Image (cartoon, rainbow, N blue to C red; front, side, top):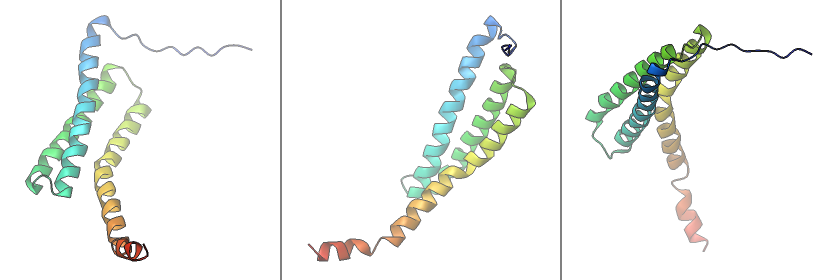
Length: 117
């Protein structure tokens, strides 16, 4: 049986620092986006901060695209990452909606639980 050999392009040594910085910025802007949007929806921040959160998402998407170009990802992987970023745009909204819906659904149950004690 023959082994399958996967040949990947080598990353140049002088590209290590830009790749490291851009991958770090993807993480930083991703956390910033989720935090700002979630905290604005929860009322800890003013709703005026939401455009800043969307700016973080746009920066995260840009740096993820540039990162994938630097590491020489193929076109399919690049498309999958961009579709994932579109989905990530809605994740904090979905999280907040589910938490709010659960609070509304079980809001009256707290009183009935306390009456039985």
